[in-house]
Amino acid sequence: MSYKLYYFDGRGRGEIIRLVFAAAGVDFEDIRFDLEEWESKYRAISPTGLCPYLVDPVTGKTLVQSGAIARLLAARSGLAASDEQEFYRVERILHQLTDIEDLAIDILFGPEEKRPAFKKEFLETKAPYHFGILAGYLREASDSKFAAAGKSLTLADLALINLIDFMEFIGPEAQELAAGFVEFAAHRKHALESNKKLADYLANRKPGALPF
Image 1 (cartoon, rainbow, N blue to C red):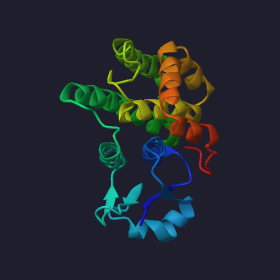
Image 2: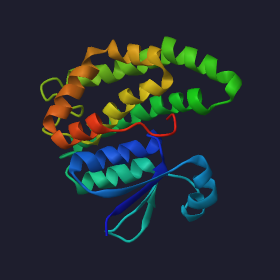
Image 3: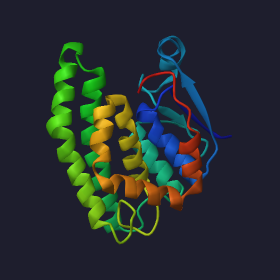
Image 4: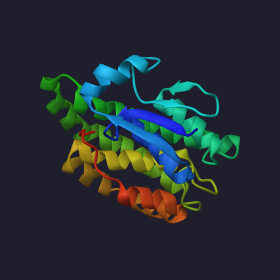
């Protein structure tokens, strides 16, 4: 049996799991669906009524919560921290990224009349603040060049790449803002050079049908 990932035909919360599989070179079934198929077929078989969810051939169970799934797969595939200090640095980055993701979700899926204000605040204050913190973490890790200052690629690297890539769904202003932090491009270059499978996945990734 292979892993089976169930998620919308978009990146969203499922993409970090796909990136772990790609970086680890693990085959999986990428089961994608649109909103109508989700409501008519796949929601009913989700343990929580939410997605993504993953059928795990190791335990025979269906796993939920994208962050928990990604952390488990990272631990299984050599993409987790090697010691407690690196563990802290990985988690520090992951939680910083979650703060940004929550803001992006408000822009894309919040009350429609509030989305322009959410986006304006994100571009003018929130994103520069959070991006600045992340860039600082990367400068701290400059000797390593990996996000968590370790000796190899971890989930923190994948999640950071995923978040910066996701700015395309917020708009060109957000992409331009992220591009202004040279640390992000340098980090991405090193991460992809360190893992050809990840680089190949990103180079050949096709856009999903859904805009997120």
